[in-house]
Amino acid sequence: MSFYLSILQLWIVSVMRISAEEGTPLLVTMIPQTEVTETGSNVKFTCKVTGQYNPVVTWSKFQGSLPDSRSIEKEDTLTLLNVTTDDSGSYVCTGTSIMGTNSSSVQLRVYTALKFITRPPSSVLVYAGQTLNLSCSASSDLQTNVSWMFDGTTTLPQGAAIDASDNLIVCLLTSLMAVTTLALL
Ligand SMILES: *[C@@H]1O[C@H](CO)[C@@H](O)[C@H](O)[C@H]1NC(C)=O
Ligand SMILES: *[C@@H]1O[C@H](CO)[C@@H](O)[C@H](O)[C@H]1NC(C)=O
Ligand SMILES: *[C@@H]1O[C@H](CO)[C@@H](O)[C@H](O)[C@H]1NC(C)=O
Ligand SMILES: *[C@@H]1O[C@H](CO)[C@@H](O)[C@H](O)[C@H]1NC(C)=O
Image (cartoon, rainbow, N blue to C red):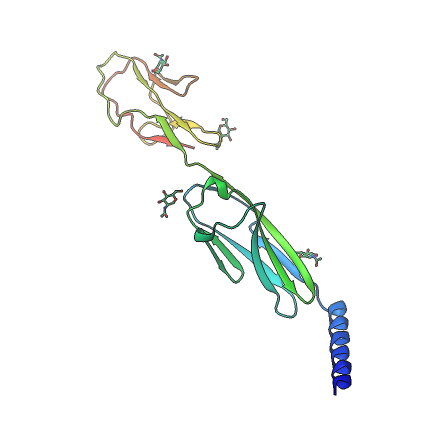
């Protein structure tokens, strides 16, 4: 009896070997391959795994571990909630079947949200002929660009200039001008 069982096992093993050699390769592709986002946001990665013999998908973080309480693994997707800068790194999905394993990764970079260091007051009252000096600066892990707009356009009023420190200087104000919104890029 056990002799026949062994023969059967041997036969199954060889059939599997043959299929493994002739089968289609296990293809694993991560979408996207890089992701740059702000702290507090949610990110979702999808791992496309194709191959025979129902490959199983597993997720891991290269150097470190998945943030347990904030990660959701659902078949071919990994969602990270409320990301922190510590979540930056490489996330790997691995497909495994009797064909072997294959993996693909995504590089996540999390930067701290842009913050104002100095922001102009929401309204200022200036007498005609005076000089108005409005300061604006912001900080971020990324390069920050401060830009000014006047009445919804990038065209500044006459006599206005932006100094080297991104302050808006308006000389010789002619009438009441509403210098309001600030856009940060
Ligand atoms: C792994 O999957 C990728 C993407 O589908 C493919 O290009 C590569 O050949 C696969 N590697 C192996 C060893 O099958
Ligand atoms: C997101 O994480 C921060 C700390 O990193 C925490 O203060 C905040 O409450 C979290 N927000 C949610 C919606 O869980
Ligand atoms: C405008 O204000 C900033 C900050 O208070 C100051 O550094 C800058 O020299 C001022 N510019 C002018 C032209 O007064
Ligand atoms: C910021 O400004 C610089 C120079 O004007 C430009 O090269 C860069 O692309 C800008 N960055 C962003 C995020 O807009």
